Image 1 (tube, rainbow, N blue to C red):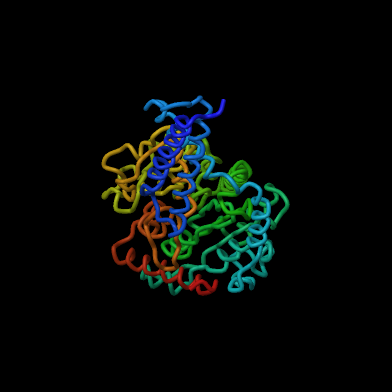
Image 2 (cartoon, one colour):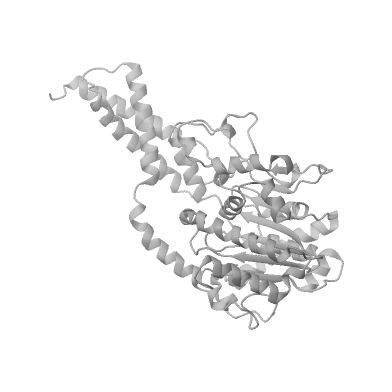
Length: 459
């Protein structure tokens, strides 16, 4: 039966109300700033889809005349949820294979400023190395090509460096399998004397192979160069395109830890074993030791710092698995003084307003605790509201713009933790520093980042 004028008017009213309601919710503040043109487009998309879906929903339930208020609310709510979900995911799937191939190619290409093999025999990719420099990938070449010089160590600490730091990196192209890549890393640690250093840091990289150099720099400086870091890659794609590699990555980390345990077993003098992971790297490293404290004991881990771990049930479960010996902070100002005794072995650095930490599927259907609590956490806007579907889509978009990196300008916001590492890494890895060392360390980290950016042509 054709709709009468009253039916058309009723459905138009429902559609208009749904569109306006969805657009209003979509316009509310979110965790991080978006580029100027993104938010209006998002609001328009959600509002338009909300109106269109409400029109269809009203027809499906047979609106012929003036709708009652309960029907209008149901239609508005259903349309808003559907609009947010479909608007957030539509359009990208067909382009993913092409984008992935292009990004993998970029991940293999070495920057001009890091294209030459380093001369230092204590790093991978050097002429003395078992790892060919051209297999390190972009991120590996950056890490091994920037060991902290002795004069910088002396400037920050006021003490002479004992030696240069060991940096071992094995890229996804350095060997054909997980087992071969791990064995190559172990061989490199033997070649460089990494097992004989006072501190051995296992850093879990992000999907692209990115290993944050800041904690490595900090460790080299505070240990006076008596340190080694080992990184084994598992891909070349950004983390948001590497979620299907978490199992492979976790297997890589577990096998690496297994082999390190074997190598250190029975040694009269063994290095302090430290773990570090950031973003997807943190999730991967935690997935490799699901037993939490029991696994840390089994591997002989002395300290672990995980930064910006992606949210979800796995993250919550791991927090619970180490609850008796962990400390979770939003920023260094929250570190207790004095530290609890015994000193926490596991540290989580997670911004209250980091969308990568806060995003999880359940937001689509229930209000998350971080939006319900009062007072709200740092950088969680008071004006941010929860609505089924729409808040999920907002936080999903937030994750895309969660990191706004400007070389040397450290910000403690969103998924950018550079401003927090200087105050957190030393304590988490077992070093106590005075105010002067801390100030010079912060200054040096910024200077080194600017210098790296200049080598990359980004500053």
